[in-house]
Each structure stands twice: as C-alpha cells, then as structure tokens.
Image 1 (cartoon, rainbow, N blue to C red):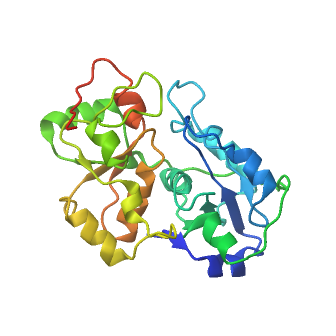
Image 2 (image 1 turned 45 degrees about the vertical axis):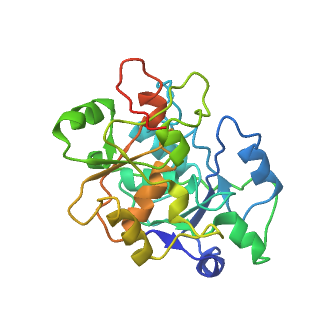
Length: 280
C-alpha cells in the first residue's frame, strides 16, 4: 500500500499535471497556530490548503468527522482532483494531520495518495523552493468515490468490541493522556482511555527529523504491543487525526491497516455514559 513520498521525489514530480499537493495542517484547540494563515505565509509551490474542518460532516458536532461522500467529492474536485490524480499531503510540523487526508482518500476509494515524509520542516531544512499567497485552483468536473466502510469504526463498534475483544484498539495520544495523568486539550473532556486499549503514541513512529521509521522498526513497535499480521487493529486518538498516523505506520510496516475510530476520544471521553480506564 502506498504510504510516503520523499522530498526528492516530490520536488521532481510537483510540476506534473496529475500531481495534487495539499497542505493538510491542523493544530489542536489549545495551540495558538493558525494553519491557514501559515499556509499563506509559506508553502510548497503548487500546494493548496485543505482544511480538515471543511472535509468533515457539517451535521456532526464532533470535530472533523468523516464527511458525506458527495461533500468530499465536490470539495476535492474544486482543487482539481480526478481519478488519475496523484495526491500528496503534507503538514507544517512533520507528519501529523497529513495522515488524516491520506486516510480520507483511501476511505473514499482513491489509492494514489502519499504523505510527504518529514513534511514542510524537512522541505524547508533542505532549502527547497517555497511560495506564499493563496492557491490557484483548477476545478475538475467530478471525483467519483467508492466508500470503504471496513476502514472506519463508530462508538457502537467500540462498545461491542468491549465484549467480543475481536479487535485491538491502539491509542495514538501521548502516554500521559492515555493514562489520565494529563488533561485533555478540549475543555470538559474526561481523561483516560477505552478499556482494553493499548498505548502507542504516534510520535514513537517518527524520527527526530519527523520522518517515519523504516518498515522493520515500525513492525517491531507494533508487534511489541501485540499488533501482528493476524491482528485486527482499530486506531484512535483525540479526534481521529493522529490515529491516522498509526494507520499509515501499519501500512508502511506491511501489516493490516484495520480501521480508524472516527469519533475517537472526542466522542468516547466527551460522553458521560462510556466506560473509561485510568492508570495514572
């Protein structure tokens, strides 16, 4: 399964008409950064800003939930995405929210999608060309979707799995948030984790320069937590963003990618009637 593209390869391919580059940056509610403003200041030439809150379900109060297929199709078609497009997603801090866009395109049946390894920090560190200002959109007629329902889980699925234990829930949040020691960035949110879940902070999948570890190292990380070739993983995080980094890592390690719990802790921890564990 396609996962990453290097800065060298993107620099060679960014001029090709079928290459669509998205800055998919997102910052947590307790962070001061404005992703859209930072895009206008500096971005990879030819890139467009894809707001995760735009490609989300407007009828759902939870943050950036999976959008209806027709909304996703219309939105990406406005950026020139077609059936033959090669999508490259990157973000401003390395590998963080770009994986969510990678997962969304996979979810809607488009396989030719990659995450820029190391993101904008690596691109900038290598003194590659940058530009500023708004993107120039080149709309296409339509973008057909083929929704892959097996790639997503909801609250009812997680509740059922508490009894069946057929899937392994892997939480990408920091260990301190997982144990309940650290407060959640969203006000009023309970701390802890889904009972039976295991912790694998998404940052463990990354090197210090924000590139992703090699497949063998990733495989070791997952297998050490009981996620092997026969496992059925369900990734999650705070709101379905960095859980996708784990999904990306599973794909790079050659393991089954399983599914992503879309509502993640924003839904589970935000409810008052879901069981939680705290190990702080």
